[in-house]
Length: 208
Image (tube, rainbow, N blue to C red; front, side, top):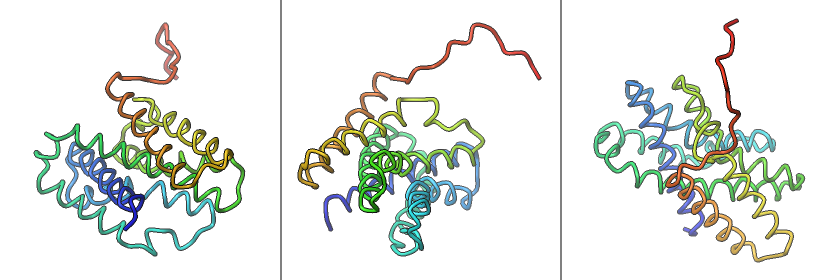
């Protein structure tokens, strides 16, 4: 098992836990918890594969990702209170997963010979779409659109990956440096509550 593959599975588990926790907060049953865990963990990678025309998508050819996601859902359901207490640990694991997911998305795009911009977009999609689907199913405004510099962290990481790639840096080094950059930036954004630019609304908009 390579280090990247380990972090990929670790990130899958963390993303699945985040989906399960949202489902529990919304008082969903076990099936709902499993669904939100699964879409959070594999939604981004599935969307990426569909856009690239890589079918069957990765989760169907490598079911270990489904097993990891469902295991995370069941564990979270059974030990919800414990998972809520170690929320900071989950956030760190989520950051590790995000860094890995973005790198995998960009590398898959480059391997498919799409444009460099397209590769960055695929990296972002791999990292954030699962969370968007999770929040939509939970009836929430997607967190990626409102909090903690989430999407812009992925964009910055994707640009760094492409820059190092164009400089002919060793592939493993590119992956390691980019993932580390995304993880650190994500954790700093959480700690210091960084947000991207927002419009200031001076008065309430009229009802329609």
